[in-house]
Length: 40
Image (cartoon, rainbow, N blue to C red; front, side):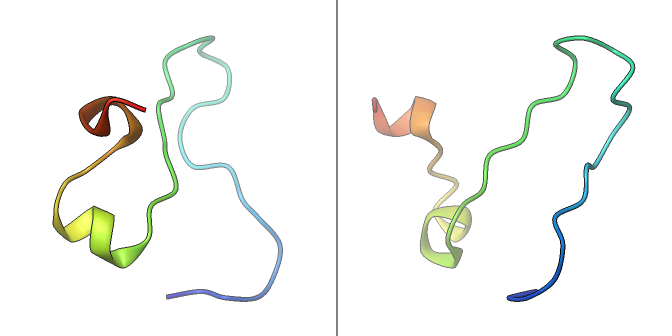
């Protein structure tokens, strides 16, 4: 787990709308609970 340092872009930034990434805490990641599945 990285808690310090610069943010980096993961994926091909030249494809508009193709990148989907959501930052999750460990608990929500392990439960596979994203904003969409939580109904947020």
